[in-house]
Image (cartoon, rainbow, N blue to C red; front, side, top):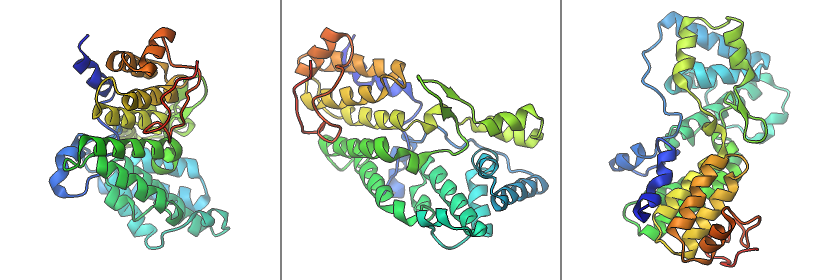
Length: 318
């Protein structure tokens, strides 16, 4: 199997790279190449009465504290543009912090909740400039760090090594804080052993015939897959982006691929296997690649931490 094929093989695991953020309108090519897995479909505008009913249900859910129902309508039923317009109309202004979670003021908590939901959805769809306006203030440092890293990754003016470092930095941020940045509150829920299940509120709306035809059509077109809520998968795809810019038979390349595979080996063994194959075929002359080949899998433990993978230890743990 040609090495060049394996260098790009992992890219076929996803339809596109996750959540790209670009600096200027001129870089739309990079942005389009990195749309999130839950790309917003082209949606025919709802009739005014239908949209008004959706918005009314969402507002009632927020005011009554029914966060599950509110998340369902915000994530599945309204389009991103409709949700943004709803938030600006009903909950404009203040950028709430996590301290507001402890408030007994229901309107204040409702505003914080729906604005934060909007922020994550916009970021998942690559609209980082808009998303920044709605993230809680205490999350802006990690948000800014992610945006800075992903911009470096997609900056064609930088060297391949500098771009790879940007993608790797973004991968580490997503590995640790991906839920805070991207989680779809009404999306699939991880159970255990690599198993996911549909969110209960979605199943309830359909099984009890609570959803009308317009609502069903919108929900079915949204297609929020389990990968949307798997921060390890998101991080691993960014690590693959980084490794694709680095040379073969390089210890750093092997470390990055091996680290990403370890992130997924229990949660998503099929994708982890693709990383294993990439390590042993792209980096067979490295100590890491040879050791993985001997084991026919990843080492039980790694001799480097995630933070050290870029320039840290090269020895493997037997």
